[in-house]
Length: 188
Ligand code: AMP
Image (tube, rainbow, N blue to C red; front, side, top):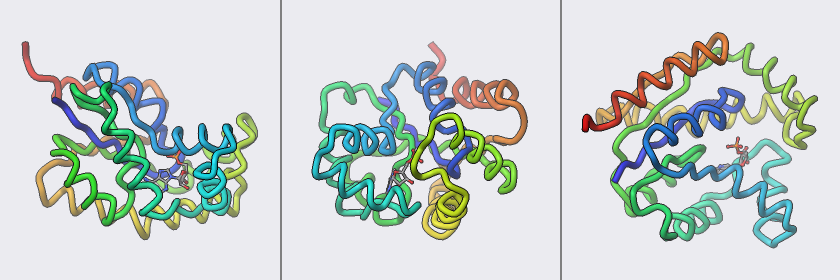
């Protein structure tokens, strides 16, 4: 069983690279952001709760997110492992994940701040995401810095970190992600 966490600030390209990495590892991607967006689209109670926080650039409260991920990780398709995209994001979520499984590696996409803001504004124009206005983008980056950056040294202390330079063209980053995937794939 391979369990990998993918971390990185909003706009770092987590979604794109998660698919690539998970494909190489032969595990499903589980993205909390995607699950929340699906709930919003279906108009569920969870979706309505999540949307209030997402639209403000804030994290969905831990108790809501943790309950959702516990349920998702109990499903059959996670038996051979999974790649978590966007979870955990807080120290409290790390504690819950520790109860559920052993993490094998934490891949962190490191991207400089200003290219991120530009990238997110461009994406906002294309995708019309309600959490991609400039004010909300800056808030999301601040929340990441305050609540999620501390997880990097936490996992670093456990010797699990694989840092990837996420600056530059998407193909260059893709190559770097593939190198990490190779290093994580057990030799056959
Ligand atoms: P993402 O697509 O991963 O950037 O997630 C979009 C939004 O969903 C985030 O800005 C948060 O509001 C919410 N979200 C996703 N994952 C989490 C999480 N692990 N904890 C709290 N909120 C989350």
